[in-house]
Image 1: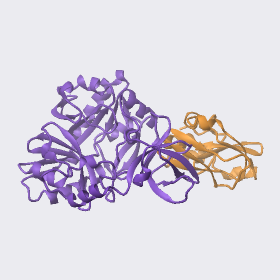
Image 2: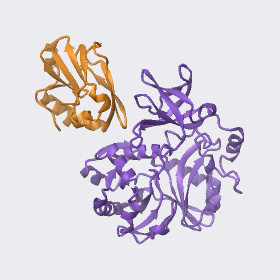
Image 3: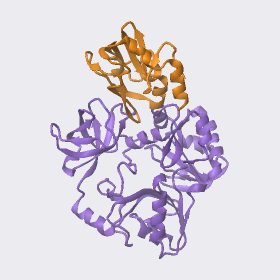
Length: 364
Length: 127
């Protein structure tokens, strides 16, 4: 198993470590509920060094990325970022990722840890005809996220980047915690927050400085467990749960990411064009579970009182913020409308659930 | 890790306290710690009978669901209804207020076949 530069720090903090995508990662420290609430109410810090960091640079980088991804990176301003996907020719999702533009001809892609190699392979293949260099820096780059309503207040004292001028989905080069860093206002929690992209070994001084400086604000180290419940409340998809090669962006509710009007041809265009005009055959829906029990990935969804399965749950958890279980599930489009009632098969029981709009939680 | 000397244990991390011909059952502090925040405990109705090692219920944490196994054969005489509203008692007080069911044991002497505290400590230390 691979380890991040912080693995001993996690152990010292009493983390429970698990194998996540081949990485030994903290799933929780004190407890998922505590960590979740800390991010909703104060500030939490996450080691996300397992995530990939792939640099694309050169005169052909903008056009090459436009051909490789479903979004339109040439339209990004320098210093801005957007959410994107890389799809197969049939429109299936190879990965979802964030694209940051650091300069006219320099982009940073942050794919999921589990998909780093397939993404890098696809990029090498798709950018072959473009004057662009691909540098997979994942194993020499650390990523530490600071998330929560007090994240800006904490980080303001620790960086030379003007956070007031750093908008949501923006990135700036500077220092954080005395280390050279890219400071991005992005995250996966539904709160304001930042992601600090630093050299591999800089993760430890950055982490310790954040923890020390954040003590008065009630900072908490957060694991992948809280990350999962936070992103679920925020209605954000997780690759492997909501997204995979058998899923297209439109059924995942992410059709807005696909720029069918961009000038460049791109891998998946034809298939995605067809799906866009025909409409998806299933839709990702939010479920509020009204009975007892927690819907989990793979549980079947039925019409009330019927044995016929109409869909299945992709993610589910007790929502720490709402106090009730929530889930996401793929359903036929005509069953995916808010207010519709369905049943989830949770072990031997049938539990009532209502389709609700996503996200479950939106910050004030 | 707390492993009280007066209890008996299973390989599945349940504990049993012998009280006459009855046994009180719960899960160990180690198991509760591994599960993380417990959010839901599904328990059987009193009167239900279980064989040894048969599943008597389900415990759900934020992250995962796990079966609960009866340490010995017996009939449920009482369940801890408090857990319906306060499942966190399993984390906070696994050997006390976090108890789950009380069984009338088919064979109280079979308790000797369960692990004692020392053997259970070895089990969890071996990981």
